[in-house]
Image 1 (tube, helix red, strand yellow):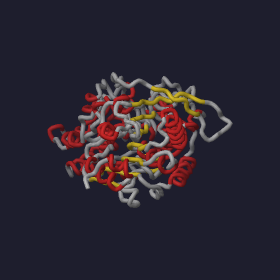
Image 2 (cartoon, one colour):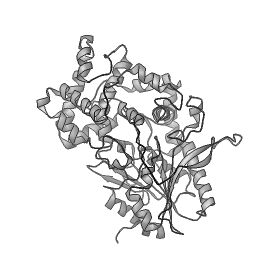
Image 3 (spheres, helix red, strand yellow):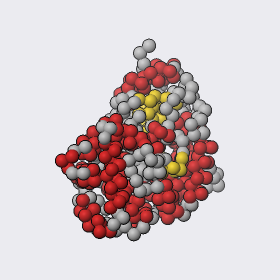
Image 4 (cartoon, helix red, strand yellow):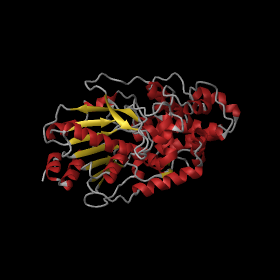
Length: 471
């Protein structure tokens, strides 16, 4: 039987919904930007003005500050967007879940999900995640205030939003379908898991449902993804990275390194954290490109979507550029040119200053301070070089754990306990629910923490080799 979302919605034939996803997974895109890591180029993108003209005005919803303390009556304004253009009485409601970045109204005008919204007569909503974008629950980003930033509070936001909007618009008996990718993909799955009476089905794309302190497997997938383009590519990256680590041991090389990578100031390596930050920043060129390879989100106004794995590997295999180290530097300069950066700031002390600034106007307030806090307080996800089966060196697990202590006074032991609690609360890989689809692509490193095999007939996984999948 041909797959249609309308058939799924009208008859609750979930297996048919899965077939549709298989057919369109290669090109559909339903997610918000999932950071996963906070690189120098992510920080630069936060500073870019990517706001585009939109037909959809910002809407504001009165949200509770603390859903789990009945004595706390404080409220705040949460931003959302709505597209009513396709809605027909009796149609479903599509809810796109915001993630660790500002909600972009471009998603209310573009994306294949709107094609199906038109076919089904669906109402489309997008709710921005608390503490990101313009949704500011507290006066600042102090660690004391960040205790209100958690996936559990975010899910309760979704539940309260869904309940009140449904009442206000007469949608209480409509079928609600949640969408999300990366961290919002996990939220989509958990929304169905924890609030099954409120959401009929969820599409949890590239969803890392298993929390782990150390996540070196991320870089293992980066290796395999680079190798899928050219088997020599990750080997050359490893040679370059190892060469750079050796050069960092000799301060006499710092002037040349500063010039080679066009650094904003002379390289200063005084601690292991200085070295690790520098090495992670450069590795981020490859990590980010692999994670967002051939991303089709150009309509969001994002820069750099033209830089793909193919482009990186073409540079790394170009012997005319010099040895692997020289090609590694060429990749860094290419990324700077792409993002219109005059120079590369790899100062760890500057990074610490940015990340400990608690003002909403601070340089890391767009996402960085908040997302790193969530990794320390809930998920871990630290993409360390602790595995031998990956191409980089020099930023071990301890580098990330020290940031938790320095930025939020969260110890390594507390991070480990928080991760354990997250897996106990959500079930990790052992999700017991229904009507959740888990699409993943083999190139996306986050699939290593996701559901890639069917749990049951109505908890299916869609795993497509050779692509990066944002559904």
